[in-house]
Length: 471
Image 1 (cartoon, rainbow, N blue to C red):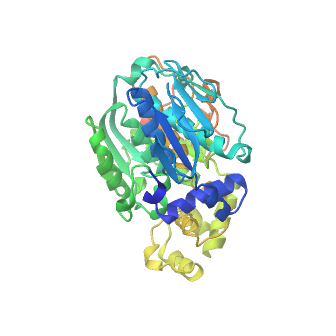
Image 2: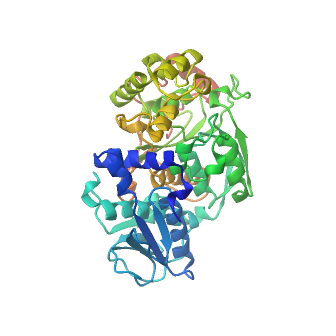
Image 3: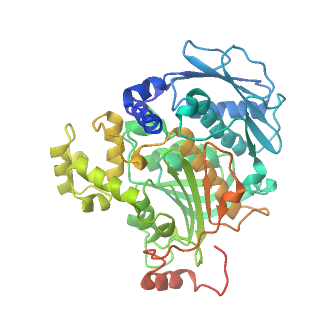
């Protein structure tokens, strides 16, 4: 398996992310990613085989080659999963999966892997992919990650019985069919979701998406993200109908003044987009986001709530302000144009006059962040400033999607699950820790929670806040 299945733009986006992490130039980062990984496992060990398949699917979106059982000239690392002997003298990374935890490092027990819920194999693969990058790049990556790592399943706070039970989504909406939306359905196919899920995204698959949007391939370029994701994933969901909606969420025809949005899964790109989604008054929100490759944030709230909303979690900050000014400068438009999120006809002509090789007519309606990532991937824009605009690696986006699926399982599934929190920060470079789950209160001055008019509308839609409630 190799990244030959990726476009030049997708490979360049990987290089841009690595360059930002290492503090190096794009050419050096691109060369640094031209290594291979060999995965060794016992095919008779079902858990080891599942982790191996998931790991390969993630790594092939990032590095040059992934092989099973044999090395290539560029192979730099052998990953051994379960009870197997090394086939090479290369540096190795060992993975053991027990019934209560997985251990990733150089000295875990070498024995047959335990039988665990399939979605946990994907979770382990995400952490193994991060450990692979750490093993290859070492201290050059700006993350303090010590191996071996122990991924304890009890830190997820989910009743083991919940993994096998059905999860009734009802009528739910997924906002965003990009990297995290892809990752969510990639993980959720290992759970028993039922109901109807509207996949809402008005964007098309672009060449630069393929490094992280794990369902998509070259044949999907230029097609609707929502339609492609529904088509490719539907066969994995016998009890869940995936309905593609090539709209922005706020432009859906069923939008009304009533409680039209009872359950929303948020996987959009930008902080500003999340704040705008909060203005649609969703009843229950499941949200996951990434901060380049440093961190994943998982958030939940159900109205009425005394906890933080999307606008509280993703308040405007200096980094967002800097990035928007940076994009405006590159495109030759105003900051107010960038804040509007979508490119207008007049702004499209300004961008076409500023950026060589783009046609104004093809830009109208595209999100500024999307265009910026695309042009960085194509090499049209050379700078790497504005870290949040740089697209993360596949394993980070899929980790975010996996944690989002687990959060839906926690809240909508069965079992005695941990529910006394609304915010969880998780690092791809460290095991998930239950103690980092917290209950965040509303943000002082939040544009949604602190607005008395919006609060009264919210109460009319979802009920008045009782004397005591949980988030």
